[in-house]
Image 1 (tube, one colour):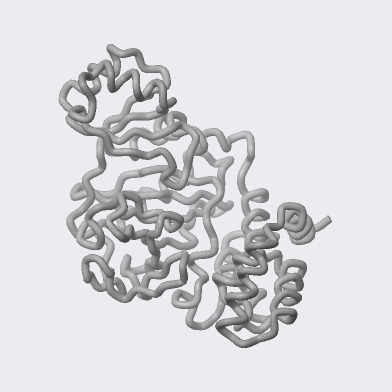
Image 2 (cartoon, rainbow, N blue to C red):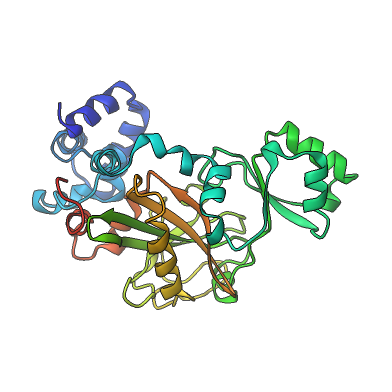
Length: 337
């Protein structure tokens, strides 16, 4: 059974019919196309291109020709890339923050503590000259469970330690102080870069990169938390297109700060690219990785690595004016996809 067909059957088993019909209603309202045509076209695209109804909506498949649709990386194609390029036996290096921090310690640029195995004395020593820290669970992603805490939030340090222990905290670390240019976009969040690399017989390559920017005063930049993203020109480190969010809003300027997004230049872009290309060789069994990078006044630092990089946001309408998806780009570096 092909990957696309397996994906379609998997979707059918776990299908959220309410969301599917809600998607059909949205597209019907925007285009005037019949609901039955939209429904059957979604199903057809699932079998033909391995797309789900979220792919269909976010990438506006309903406005694309079959030739254009065939150029898009859909969820099933992304899953196939992961299966082809990444060895499951090494997922733990990226899934567990303590393992990731240990493996890529030279790329972090900040102090951290394995809190999962830390005694109170270890924690007390770490906190000796710190007034605030970031705390993270070991195995979550997408910003889940990440908090900024201050010593003054607790009656005393022992109570802070006991509370974090009860919350199954995995890592405590220094707060990343981002570059002033990055902070200008949305100062309440750490605005990060996602740089996706592929490792083949010729070495590591950057396939694409984008910036994620927080919104609404929220402390995370994740798109699932209301953030936005825009692709980075690999040659220049500049943002070429407006930002876009999961609600399909387009932003030429940030609504909170007024900073112009197209034309924004990423500080330390060359250093960021070099950092990710070096890191891509450290665990050669994981050949398809999305690196999350914070940019400080002293250069780029790793936030985390992802063994299942996202694929859809760089293919949304404002970012592909020629309506050609990312699949041809992947095929420059990956055979058999």
